[in-house]
Length: 190
Image (cartoon, rainbow, N blue to C red; front, side):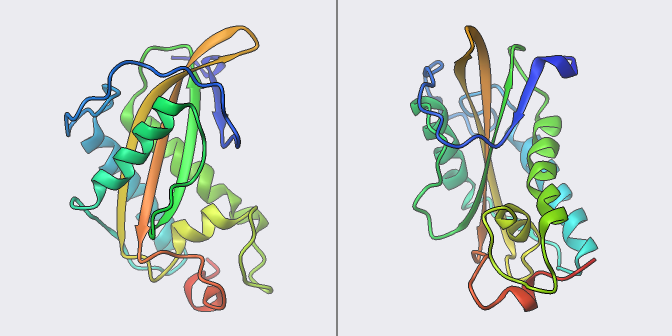
């Protein structure tokens, strides 16, 4: 797959997604054919690399909670929406569009986590707090979040007459981050 096949990023308000396939309960590949074990371990590793830069302890995967993130990813893909769940966990969501029929799970995980982390360039450590421009980053490095759960699913989206496969990634965090008044102790400068 080449770079020209990707339109990636975080797009709000997607409402014209066409559902793809039948949702499967296969715990390894989910609805998508994506190896969820690889996606989850790669996402965890990438999170912990960034967290170490900000003096936050490593997180661990929560196998018992992965179903929540996977179910939400499948919901997004099946319903063609891009919105947060009503989970009590912290949550980051991502979608990548491609004309390819599949994506590499490790690549997808790295793209999602890197996209969220890259908001670091807009974070003001001198004035710590929540901002919609940096909320994904602050959740990735939030010191008191100790467990990570991730899921992925595929839907389809037509953009300017071209049909793309839409690969959704959902990561949820417990305890949830981005707690008002707690930023100075949870988001450290590198």
